[in-house]
Structures are given as structure tokens and as C-alpha cells.
Length: 107
Image (cartoon, rainbow, N blue to C red; front, side, top):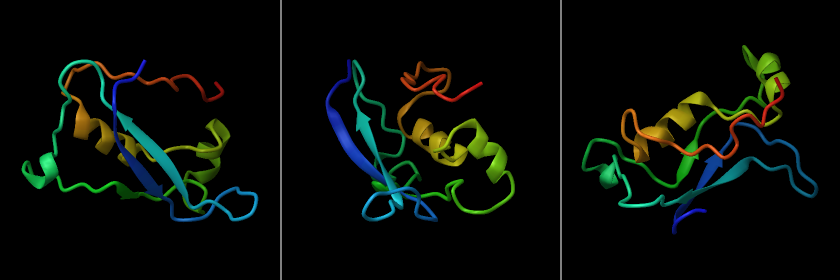
């Protein structure tokens, strides 16, 4: 279903969430290649987008405006800015993007 594994990203959250022994303050994001030639819109800084595989975006498990509404939609809401940056990194405008988790949140 997926192509080759391109990288593993660690999303560092602003606050620790659920856990068993330690509370997790990160999530892993696996980046796979799709069919055909991979799209790289950041090119290790060549196109003005410096990116590393450690992403720091505030999560909704910390207190703030909109937190309660976001958490009622899904217990592990991802920041819109993080998803937007990921899409800008590896897709073209008006391109096709596979979202295998589309519709996983309650209505």
C-alpha cells in the first residue's frame, strides 16, 4: 500500500498526554513515499523551507482557547499548522493526498 519509508518524524507536544509508565509528550509520524517520483518542496533549505524530523507544535492537550471543543471531536487532535506544513512539504497544489485516517473522528 505504501512505498518506501522516507523518514520518521517526532512531533514534540507542549504537554505530556496519556501513558502507562511515562506520560508521552511526543507522537511518531512515519513518512512514506508514494508511487512515482517523490515531491520535496523544502529540499533541505534550498527552497526557503528548513525542516528537521523534530516538529514542535502545540497540542490540544494543554489548556487554551478551543481546547474543549477540539477534544470532543477527537482525543488526539493534530494541530492544523502541522498538517498544513506536512502537506506543503510533499505535495503539489491541487495534487492528490492519501489520508488513511479520514473520517476517524466522531461526527
